Image 1 (cartoon, rainbow, N blue to C red):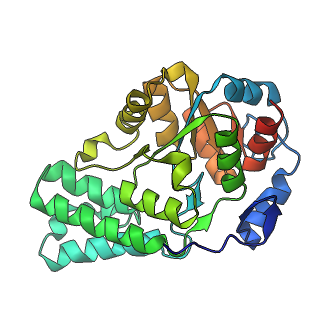
Image 2: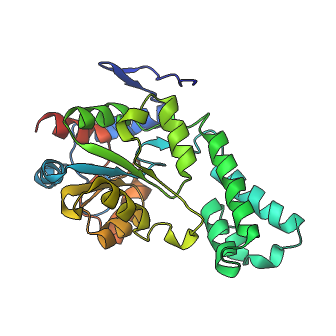
Length: 277
């Protein structure tokens, strides 16, 4: 197993990679709690009590993968992957399977879902999904750890909470990344991701429900950490309290626009809260 370098931000035994992008994000959020509540992304502390309540009630934490744990496509463009999938389809004379907006979406999951809607359960969908999985696996080599994620994960485990990954990415991809960071024991065996049943991708709550059943957890005693509206909607359908992570203003606006009320701009805020309960 090859362990990825942990970077240069020292936080006891847990270190993490901080690039100029994440450094700016952390500086903007330093000393803050939740976001403003109006979608401005200014990071003022408008609800530390809500955050504290979410954390103290939780016995299980369900993590989205790409976003809260790492930026999977930091060095392997998701847009390039989507374009590759479109080109692969066109090379087989299947251009007509996608609308113009789907071809130009630059989102590999949009392409995959579109083909599945038109040919559900087909060999074509199976092959396309595997191609996406292989691209995601390549991306793990250059994925960028989310600032403060590693120490937060280890601290939650140290406090006796159980963790699971609930993602639209391949579970093989999440497991590969976690192994490279030495975090497998913090989650295993609870890594739940994309299956061949693509209609179960979030915002469907399928992967959250699988995690809850496997861990014997009631929804009210769990907490979902996610960074997209689909995470928020899936948590709502599963009855799981939600904590939004928004690394920039655009992400925060999307989360708040979907209805998320507790959003942090930095996982350091969550780490501090966990250490204080």
